[in-house]
Length: 293
Image (cartoon, rainbow, N blue to C red):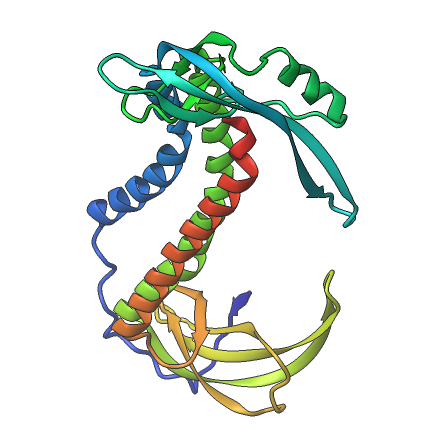
């Protein structure tokens, strides 16, 4: 926070840089990047619907079958076992020899907590049984004895659910961009330099524990040639009354940072960091949002 304060010792400065012109292309690029980051994962339901629409009917002959177990761990570190039927068969396709494949149902597959439930399905398909199945003509080894398909209705449900979830998550990236990245760009273009000093310390606490911050106070001149006094925090314990360079925006004096005016290298590094954050958030949400597909 800052307050206007009259001080005759402050030297009025009138050579301010002009307020930057509107940047419609930059704003458009920002919106496009965020929109693409939301749309790409949200549209995976349509991709799956298109992918599974290519499957065709065929004839499969059972060659083997058994129950397969999978070990899992819950959030408390406790393990449990689920069971699925694992059937092996050959697929008869036109114009080719028989193709070996395995599995039971798809694209969604149920698992059982009791081995007898999975074994009951295996018992329905004795070795030598011929039955209909569905397979991918491009890759016949990808086949299902029971094919559930993937409807457009389901694809739309996945789209809207993912769009909302990813949209909310990308707000974090948007806030980082406007609160951090934009400040770098603005201070690079029109930041003014002054000196600040540590005026006090505070010990704060969060969910992790206690931490120290140092409050740096600085003075400068606003665009209206009024003396201003502002302050911001830095993490860690700095010596009381120690002096640091401060770069601030004369159009908005509360926008300031410790150090000199940002360089192009700082801008590029901040852009890369923001994009990596965008990718990380998208990947994190994708993992936890995968069951929606």
